[in-house]
Amino acid sequence: MSFSQTLVDRLAAARHVAVLTGAGISAESGVPTFRDPDGLWARFRPQELANVEAFLRNPVLVQGWYAHRRRLAQEVAPNPGHRALARLEELVPAFTLVTQNVDDLHQRAGSRAVVELHGNLTRSYCIDCRRPAADAEAGPAHGREEGPVRCPACGGLIRPDVVWFGEPLPAEALERATEAAATCDVFLSIGTSAVVYPAAGLPLLAVEHGAYVAEVNVERSAIAAHVHEVVLGPAGTVLPALVEAVAARQGRGG
Image 1 (spheres, helix red, strand yellow):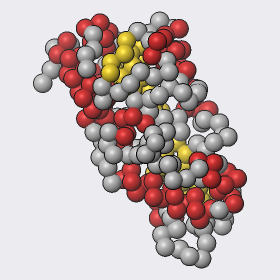
Image 2 (spheres, rainbow, N blue to C red; image 1 turned 120 degrees about the horizontal axis):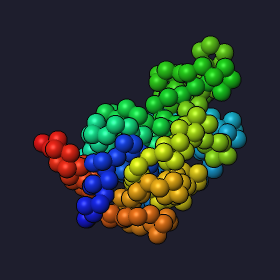
Image 3 (tube, rainbow, N blue to C red; image 1 turned 180 degrees about the horizontal axis):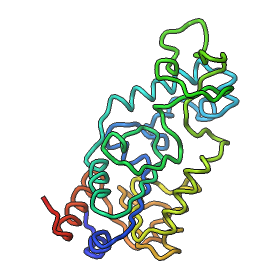
């Protein structure tokens, strides 16, 4: 693991830092990933669980699966990488954290300016009246044998507030993410394989608009050749050291 002094200097002087995080940073907290061979979906075909048609066909299965995922996320804690990003937010005038993760770990670590591209497991809503559902109403079948969880107001099915296959990203979140990539001074791409678009295009957009773009990952991603710097290593190791170096460069170490 080694990051350049250029990256430290750019971050220390930046007016606006934008960050994109993917499954890699959550995996370090123990949240299984989807795309690894031993990931969360190894036992299931994604299309059986993560699209509207599958949900309508078997809502009990899908509700129970997402409740299982929610429990897994709630049982783990933010890691030093998450906490370092929350610290970085305090060191720069403007900060935007765009995440593809749905586990709420960034918020639990203290990050405030979080843009959720793929939604959040902790939220659910009714597919008919769109009313938000409390956790107790959203969650698995909680041993329910009589059928799926339904909205207490209208009787509609309760679904997780996440983006499924075939669904567009939330327009407001995508707009905020795109604006951040186009206006930031430094862009960090962390723990993402950079194969899922449009998120994977954000670092490239930042490059086009003159930002210094660095990738932090355990292996080079699909866009590594197009960024200014690649720092190989786990986010939980790289980011605390990087942020501490930035704080020291600003005279705010310790």
